[in-house]
Each structure stands twice: as C-alpha cells, then as structure tokens.
Length: 390
Ligand code: F1P
Image 1 (cartoon, rainbow, N blue to C red):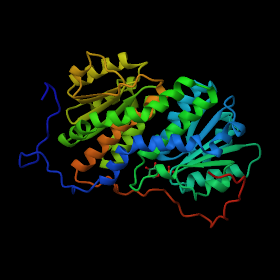
Image 2: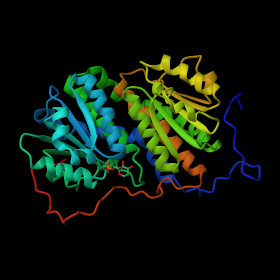
Image 3: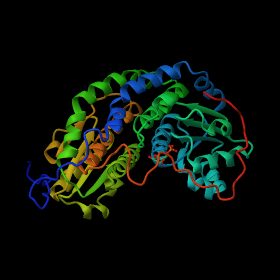
Image 4: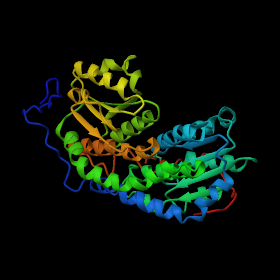
C-alpha cells in the first residue's frame, strides 16, 4: 500500500471484514449500471422519432428562464441540467426541491422569473412533485414539461407536455440509468435548442465510449470499494460537478447506509477539512476548468492521512501520487456530453461499499422507490390540464 494509504481496518479477529452479502445481492443494480451505454443508445433512437420531443421547442423557449422541480436524485439531476442550460442557453435556470415549491410557490416563481417549469420524477408518483404539478396546473400563463419513466404517471394529465422513458427505468430502487438517460435527454434538447452540432455529435459518440470505459474501469472501482473499510465519505466538485458530488454522496448513502457529505471542492478547506483521516474517503470529481486548483487539495488532504479517489477527464501527472485510486474518463468532448459518464464511477463505488458492508443495494434500508405521502385531507383527484403524452 502507498505511504499514507488507507489502512484496511481489521475486525477484532484481525482479518478484514468478510462480506456477508450473497452473490446475487446488488445484482440488479449492477446490471442496470452496466446497461447504461445501451440505454443511452435506445434513448437517442427513441427521442429521434418522438413527436412529443420534437414538439418541445414549439411550446418552450430557450430564450426564457426555466425552473426545475424534483426530489432526491432527480433534484440533483435537475441542478446539473440547470447549471448546463444556464451556460448553453444563456438564460437563468435553477432547480428547487418540490417541497420548497409547495411551501413558497410565489416567492420561488418570482425569484426564478420563470413561466416555464420542468418537473422530473422517475417514478412519476412522488407526492410532492404531483402536488406541485397540481398547483401549477391551476395557474394561468405557466407551461410545464413533465419527464418521467412512468408513462402512466398523473404528470401526463397535469403537465402541458410529458415525456416518458419507460425503457430507462430500473427494477432496483436507486436511480442509475434513469438518472443518466434523463440527463442525456436534456443534453440533446440543449443541442437542439442551440443548434450545437458539436454537442450533438459528441452525444452520438458517448455510448460506445462509455461501454469501453466500463470494460476498462468498472472492476477496479468495485475492487477499491470492496477492499477498504471507510467510516465516512466526502464527495467534492466545483460548478456543475458539485451536483454530481451531491448525487455521488446520495448514491453512497442509499446503497451502503454510510454517512456521506458533498461540498464544493475548495469549500472543503473552510471547516469540513477537519474530518480528513485514514477512515475518510474523499472523492474528487474534477472539472476541466478547476482541475489544477482541485489537484492541490488532493495533495493537501492526502498529507492529512485521508484516503483519496480522483475522478477526472484527464488527471494531471502530479496528482496520482496523492490519490489511492485515479479514474480517468478520457472523453474530450463538450462538458455536457461528459457528465453522464462522470456519474458512473460513484454509482459503482456506492454499490461496492454496500456489498462490502453485507447490505443489498437493490433494496436499500428504510427506502421506497417513490415517496408517496398520505393525502392530508383526502384532496380531490388532480384536475386535468393539457393532455399530451409520449
Ligand atoms: C425521487 C426519490 C429518489 C430516491 C428514492 C426516493 O424519486 O427521491 O431520488 O432515490 O427512490 O424517491 P422520483 O420522484 O424521481 O421518482
């Protein structure tokens, strides 16, 4: 092991903890993670022939602000899209958790300055999202785009237009391929909105690149997660990658019931750095624009004894000396085309840690596929609005 490398913490018997998970556990989640390249190919093919997808630019304008509303992984996905759309469309885009929208709709609509909203829910059953859809359906002058993997979702009745991606849904609980497939739907929409030929071409090359990348990297990431016992997990990213870090932390918590936190990379020095120790795995999601400064922090935290995992498109030669595992994506394409690929390493890591802890990532503790809340007062069935479905 490298100097300052994470120590394999021993069980009382002095042997590394044996994984109690059965061989099949996590199998569904692993299959779904590894199926992402073909899921992305199918998504591109289906969107190319989808009349509703083609209708979006007639109903929604790339010259006006967008407000995204979602929960959980879909909320972090929304922020990734909002951050990229703000750059590519040059209009203000932001995301809010559906619960926030329910408590302060006027304030948030005013802050966002948006009359077009995007509601994302893989299950299409999340009560908070459906309640927001209902609230918006009752207002005039707003347009809502629903995106779900459930073609029978009530979003279809409540939103101006709803796109469904049932082929990308998972059988297991955590979002992996649905997360990246929906992300790529918005990348393609951005390419269409802005007639960005380079982005569109890069998206076409992505599935083959991802398949090759998985073949070369999935096992080493899984082995790293399986071979070490960490007590705490930190995920760091700047700009759009901060939201990838948030999603990575959520995957780790969901699949391994571990405590995981996400920070802006350079914010880590401002207090959270006190957690750095051999028992802490700090994962860096480097973005091309900030990689040099982020690389300096890798060295800093390594010298504090922390375990480090560095994920970047290309990692500077000086960094691997301070990284217990370095993962390169090597996809020299526009950033929006890289992000689905960049989401996969932390999916694999969370799965591996969950299995090492003897858990079953296919059915995480305490969680359900959708958060469906009891109606408080038997609220009436949702009013219908425009009815366009995929
Ligand atoms: C949102 C969500 C998931 C989470 C869990 C509970 O679901 O919070 O992100 O992993 O499955 O539900 P959805 O609204 O996207 O279906």
